[in-house]
Every structure is written in C-alpha cells, then in structure tokens.
Image (cartoon, rainbow, N blue to C red):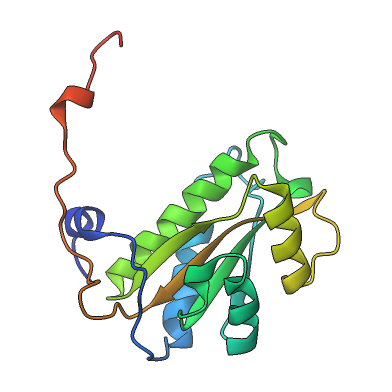
Length: 172
C-alpha cells in the first residue's frame, strides 16, 4: 500500500494494459472505494456498478468507447436517480465515486482510465442497452472505468502538472 501523496501524484490515465487477469478481490476493493465516496447527502448515494470481464461485451462497449476493448475489466458506473437526494447534481456524486475507484486502482498496483459517457444521451442509451438498461430516464450510465495492469510505457508515474499561475486568492 502506497502513501496517499504517492497515490494522488502518480495516478495517470492508463490506456493500454497487459493481458493479465485482475483478481476479484482487487475488483471488490475498487468497488468498495467507490462506495466510500462522499455523496450530496448521507444515505442518498446514487451509484451502482456493472463489472464486465466478458471479452465480447468489452468489445461491444469498445465500439462506443474504443479504449474499453483492450482492458481486462471494465466497470460501468450507473446512477440510480431515484436514490439521489439532489436530482440535479448526481454527476458530482458519481464523479467522486469514480475518482475514489481510480485512486484505489493505483493503491493496488493497477491502472485505470475514466471513459466518459454522460451527459451524451446517445452514448448513455447505447451503453445502457449493452448492460441491460432499457430506459435511461432514472438509471443512467455515467462513465466506464477500465482497470488492469499497465502495459509497458503506461505505468503510473509522477507527472508535474503544478502551475502556480492557475492559483487565485480571494478573487479571480
């Protein structure tokens, strides 16, 4: 287990993976990390997750989000709007869950990639159909996180993005 500063500073988008299975125990840890995210109100967290390992399903998802195809595992984050307390900010709750999951992947020695789905209604509908959601009015695919062991050249490593010119105090 790495320290938090190392995890945050080395997480990067991993777009290529080794063809090596990810342990179910590690997948469960990633899912638990997502569920630990803050929501807009305690007990009203909208997240649900669909774990996909089947190569055929990954390929179907890859027709919409190409980076999914080569991943050993994809997790579709789905917002159940009925459970959201604030119906208009579910995306923020889902974003917190997604980032927790990506950080936990790094903690476990894995890599991950956030593949955006929402708010594009067409993409949300197509992804929904693949994972068994017929109507996206109350159950919305938000994003797909791919997870795996980074391929050579794609390791999690520090990339200095700090830019002091982007910091403002008191006013913009």
